[in-house]
Length: 193
Image (cartoon, rainbow, N blue to C red; front, side, top):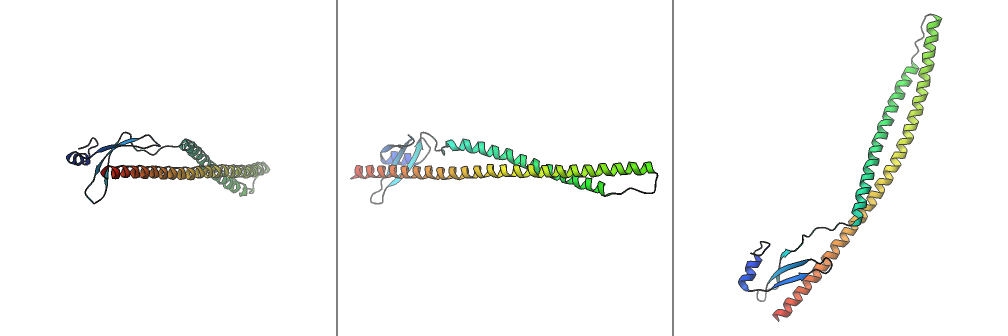
């Protein structure tokens, strides 16, 4: 068995086939490979081991992407707070309007009527303040929603750029791999000819 635990090494050792070290020019990775050359069938290539793991490379944009995602999450939390604030202000407004619409004037003394009238005036003032609070909360919600949409748009744009860069890197790696395999096949053809 080969150092990586594959059977190809044992087959290669039995048949005294050559080991080759293949260099990958872009990343500097080296790999050992065994080749089986059955007569008139074709070339079979067994990739045995690599000296470093094959892991998707991170780009510099991924750090920026994580920061943008964090910013988007922070603005999303602000948006939820603003929505809760608007809901609370709206419920307070409806309660204040209900208090202001009640007319408790009944047959009673003039002092009682004066007290009820001042309470009604106070309820109307609270209703106006609640309307102002709802308007301010709605304005804050719209500003927060605008910030959230901007952060989300930036994050999505960066996500698309990263995906395209990853696709480009994968395509380049596949192209380099094909080139290396072509070189190995050419070397083996020349060695057997």
